[in-house]
Length: 544
Image (cartoon, rainbow, N blue to C red):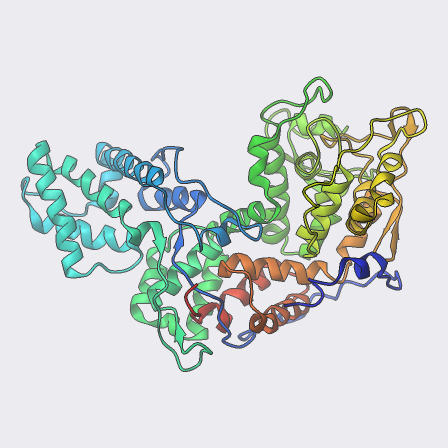
């Protein structure tokens, strides 16, 4: 595995660099093209649809009007991603019941609305036992739901479900609801199979089939099912070459659906889904309300979306940009005038404000803090693990990690964390986490700016791997230019796209992706395209 990623903690704690600010490479006149890396595949497995993928699939298959029941099999993150957990998760007995209930609820909604019904049924049934019309539905809608053509036997079975149910329930439409439910309860919908086909160019000797690759592309870039154009490309066999895949990837990245794909990647990467469960002590943080977490997440996602799709700029600038999107509530917390009396609106933060980019967002500052206070450790760990891909081991189970209460001689968190540095069991890890988090101490546990803690002036200075910073803004700049930040982004994209922790043989491809990312001026769309068109993404590895 990457020696940088697994560098000993002591070496990380002592590492130093020259401190010089690295210059952002100029935007290339022509972005580099061509396949990146060799056909070294990741492990493979049938991946279960995550909750967001299931809901997005229903929306795209049947319409945004369809309400999906909220109770579904929960996602279990591994390596920090639900996308990785989906490669190893199974469905519990309770989950089977939940999917069954959801499928009937969705089917009944589809057939009850003439507009929705018209989207899935192109023929007019002649009666309750119109097997031909039922099979037309199974063949056409089935291809979209299962993301591949149904065999003749499969189509006949779905058609039989429809006609048999129609005779029992009295209308063809009610029978059709059972056909929809049958499609949605199938493993062919709930899972993304990985069977593959022979491929002499792959190290494993196999590659994803055209239909499997179409599905793989759509859930990576859109976090949803393939559209008809992508399925048509699979049926035509044009996804068997780099040029054919690139044509579809370029089209997909130009689609509004790519924004949803980016949002899901960022949400999983930064664990922003946990903001739905954000809890703070309302007596200590009087601006806290239960809706703060979702609103804060939306601010962050809009900044990423603007940077990647509206501006197509250096992705690292998410750490240093002064542009953000706020509601009146967020504007009040940021101590700026609300640009709009309602909803979100773009705003430029003051040049003299220490608040910059991602590390100045309420989403990150509140999520990586305690319910009653800030946390230098949680925030520093976030930077090390999420932004720099450095592994911090969990503390020993018998170690007391609690900090002492403030005293007259130890009023600030900087004073109190010294206990971590004095304990040999804790020092190695905390010395590389806490100083980073202390650089964000001018923001309290909910993200409000402050200059003092318990009456004492907060000192936000420190250093990150030899680069000194004077506070949040310069800390953000130090991470922006850190040697590990951009490669970490490439690694996270690879992990998210493949659904598995990379093996040693895959490190060369990750390095090549990182180099392509840099050569393209750190544009995220270029990285996504390079990943989606890479030989490794199309090669099928050994089953896990």
